[in-house]
Image (cartoon, rainbow, N blue to C red; front, side):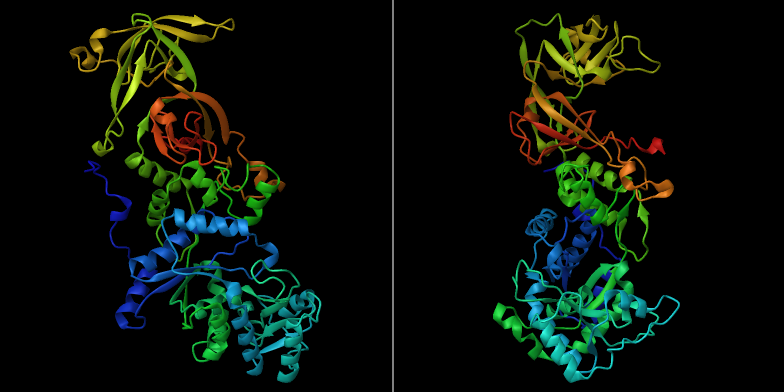
Length: 581
């Protein structure tokens, strides 16, 4: 049994945010017999840390209340979509520990959306408009002035049906016509000023080919997609709050549950008829300082080769932070700590990094690695000496067992652990001074061997034989303890020292004509060759460790091979940015 005393992330008390309270009330009142949610990303980019909150909420609520959650890829804009993104989205959801009840695509419902649009036309609630995009903007009005009716608003039902069917047949050029909802051009909510429902776009779609020269707009497709799937609680971020009246208008005026004939196209795809009325509920999105989350900006970083792709460990994408060494349990812990609210705020990235530290501190095995090596030779140890010392894999978790660490005459230590002329308060190795080698005994530095530039490249030291493990002298007090790796047994490793990608808390600040690119941190990655003990070199990709006294590291997901190790620094042992302001 584990001896870890900390409460694990999955043992947190019952969550009582406002969304879960709504769900509990809906179940208790009998409004819903079962809960159904969905996670509806657009496959036009990689998911980022902000999406982790939505994934944990959508899938987590379904899980907590015995319901189900669909993964629906909102592929209504074929010009921007790529199967690469689809694969990554599915990978991310599964990595976070969730699986979907049903994998859906908005394109599965194109036939339903089209019939729904024709119903709105027949009901006098939609019309074909010939205004150009610029004219639509001019007619829309402003936040303080009402809009003006389109000159095409009063077309007859017959003419609108005919024009819409000809749009469907591909008769008209891109942008020449749209189908618009007939709501209220004087509404205080600009989203209700006759929004577009369909636009003409002669673009091949990755799932439907060239079947459709018209595509539904996001707001229309999103609302009806939820209704088609029988979603009970449609959870989305606060920027959609102003869109909720249009969401409800679309659901109520199409009324799929009351018009099951509109769902007939689903039968050809072997999809069930399960339409119901969903409720949209908004929550605050996840924003951290020292990051940019805009897909456009992240895309620029990739295309301009300012980073090494979407999965660069410095990127805030889920693929990137996974490669950095973030764990699914750390992200869930962070989401729980941040909580669910209706108040947008910019959170300190130390919350994210702190969740990772706490998760890895509790679970990551310990290993020794030397990142900036300085050789020491124990002159009173025979040249052929070799022994294996027993080390606990985790100081707080006996269930992780022990490992054997090779010890020999020549060792690597960290260069920063030696000072020939020590500054005040220095507690590690000095010329003529003593320090404890972790788990091995106490040594004294007797001689410094320097290169032509006057830089130390080898220390001649003496091991106190009475201070070996298990001997009374091992309890002798010395000020410092340092880690080490055997020169003979240590394995060279590429060690990538990652840090924050941006050097300022608000990289989106464009004051003084600067852009976020100007705030890239030149020290965000440093690659060195160090040495790791054999038990670290044999790691599997994505296996994480605490390299004692150095930080938390992970074997790279793609580049690491046993025997040719590559480690990424996930996070430092302590927050080194706090004092930087």
